[in-house]
Length: 469
Image: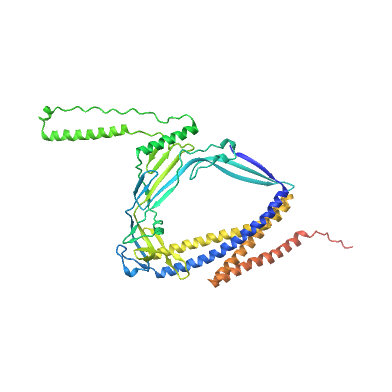
């Protein structure tokens, strides 16, 4: 059942808060303007750098052989990224020969979700109803439930064990006859599951500490598994040597083969019977699970996932620097280097980078415009708050303020973008300025004329014609 809190804010407090918001509104307006200006400069510089790199790179035909003539050149080539380094996760005692090892930790916790609904009351008061709901989820960090609003869920969270996410990379990764730099190594993403070979002693330690944590929180241990009786294998009758000596050699060989198979099965069963099944620690593929039943998690359960990055074919685009690589530096100072999985041509890499640049440009433009509009609403929001004494009137006025702030915010953003582009693309900059001016003209003049038309149409009282005598 959802838990609710109802709070009431007085009219005076609301007006005071709205005046305080003017300062933060100005800061938002300035921040949005600065972001728009910076983003346009970044976009143009990046585009020019990619155009320059696209015309400067050369294909490296054979990365497996060093070519002194390519030193200092921007190259694009494909080869296997390999390493001889062995990496070890010291906390769990497992490792592998790999380019990287990673450990990801998740906790099963109660999570609080919050939603609010506000209602204006006559006289200027605001009544806010906040609803809190709770659900069990896998999260990346333990959740402090002592701060939950609903007392019924406070202190409901615990963890059976605590570990940190970890990631480590090999220092020596070869790419053909060359070595990859640290930043290029971190771009490799050939992830695979890491086989777990955790020692039995360490697993027993984990099991013991996990059991203690479980019983401290849940109380008496709840057994989830019944002890299994060992399966008895039927004894194989031994054939006396006197009788075996009378048998043909082919039959003897067959009997010896069957006996070897039987001994192998018996040994495997003996090992299976002697292996202890831990109650609170479970291994499945590359996941180490802390809890009673992995298929039915309880609050406090923990799962740790291990992965490795294995050798893979990659394409590198960077400047050759001896036996390694460094970023390409364009004339405008922008730097560029990349590593992508698989085989790609230089033109494909440049095209993908240009698409990514365009995507980021538009995302930051939209974000910047929204910040500018939000800043303007913060600056002029006090006007609406003052009228909250009569919610109906305040609602209509607030809608109008929102429209005005949106139009001005978009127009201002287009002007900022246009001025920024004037330094780089004059034609587009002038077009944007014309568009912004048109919006201002429509709002300032056409909107005004429309209001006059409406006033003349609906605002003048109707008069009855005077009858002629």
